[in-house]
Amino acid sequence: LVELNKAACYLQINDPTSALTSCNKVLREDRNNLKALFRRAKAHHNRGEHVEAQQDLERLLELDEANAEAKTLMPHVKRAQRVADKASKNTFAKMCEGFGKIGSGRDEKPKEEPKPKEPEEPEQRPDVVQVTFKIEYKPAEGEVMYIVGEPEGLGNWDTAKAVKMRKLPQPYVPPVGSGRAPPEYHHWEVVVELNQDLGRFEYQYVIKSPAGERQEEGSKHKCDVTGMGGSRVKCTDSWRNAGA
Image 1 (cartoon, rainbow, N blue to C red):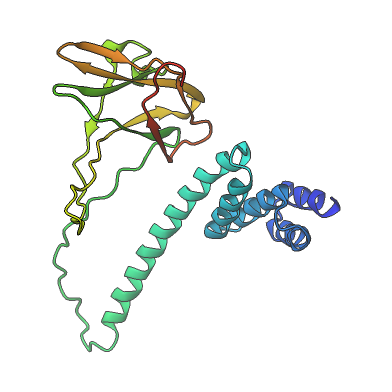
Image 2 (spheres, helix red, strand yellow):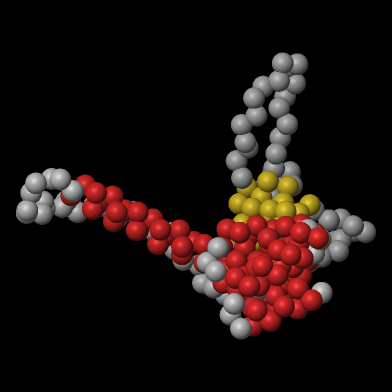
């Protein structure tokens, strides 16, 4: 307890190295101590050791998957690692360029041909979560899957504004020796960007066809995006009938 309190104090006065030492002492005696794992993750993060911070957070979430502090810190750690990776890549490229000039014996700089710009992955807003919704359902002819829910981005429970899903192509399954037909997969998927301030919200799936529409009758699905801004969340569901 003393070392845990010392770690917290060290973090408050921006001394992550001492905090790391205190957390390591606790974890040598109790490797599953949640507070020590979280505070060591913060210490690693503050020291720029984002890979180690992510490892501690992943371990913490294995032990306590609902830990709100770990869920909040994780996207910040991942963003910081992406920035560090990009900076490291640029530094390495400049070093290689410098090595190529050594011993060339030429005073004049050769004209560089313009390099085609690589398409950069668009940066995600820090308050936005990319939520992937996925469900397996074998449709009858003319049926299309939609999703509707509490957030405005899911139609605010108005099925007329429900979000249409895409049916994924059948994955290749090698033929079996028995001559039996390979299994069929009927997966539907859609990616929706939602603000992390929505917190915990509910949603359901809707099937639309020329004959009308049919909505799930069972309990509503739930998703929590609190503190997950700048990251991705995946919700894999099954169709719920009445009583489910």
